[in-house]
Length: 246
Ligand code: PTJ
Image (cartoon, rainbow, N blue to C red):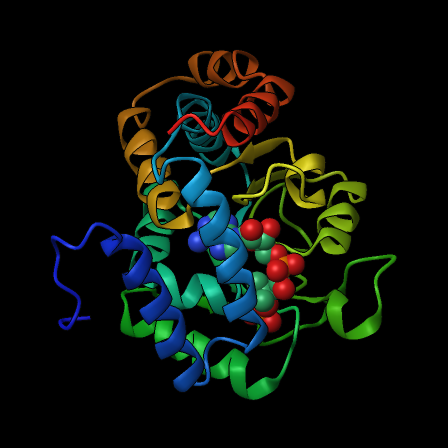
């Protein structure tokens, strides 16, 4: 990371790419994660590589949901672990949520490597190693979750999630918060709170909103949630991308 000059016009994008490459080398990130990163990077470019106002509203609503939840869980895959390990640990701390490793291309080696990596970045407890429950209506390997984690959760944050799993979690009746730079992707389309923003910006922003809302009572948090319009947020993101207005 030291090799990239900070004044480079594409600094953040280069840093992100570098982190994904390091993740692959360390056995944390799947090779497919590099393709996912490339797609995300293209959408981020069209968004102007900034948090648009509707995404900030979504990040605030996400914070309110996580604070109101009885059992919030933050899901971690190979890209998330490579890009924002410490930031996810900080968010888990701020909203008192569990972290659970949940992989699309599941292998025991990668689960362990990611759990270790998260602990090195400040996470206390990491779930996902038990895999003693299943999300209904998904093929066996991809449905594995912890019974006392995602399976029982009322609110789940699933960044960069696969569409089938996002739909299956939605069918389980969970409140789903999705971070995905592609507003047309199925995961944000089924989310209660779609956040169309780069995970690198989105996670610290949710944490900051959670800290500001920490003293808010239940009514205030509910008002934040009611005030957020998910359809409008998706439309605004798509309009911004299509406008080419950078
Ligand atoms: O580690 P695993 O095995 O769980 O696999 C993780 C990946 C991401 C490889 C897997 O879930 C996958 O293939 O996902 P997709 O279907 O490529 O979807 C990833 C979505 O995340 C795409 O819509 C991308 O546009 C988006 N995306 C990529 N990078 C970012 C992003 N969204 C926000 N921030 C990013 N940095």
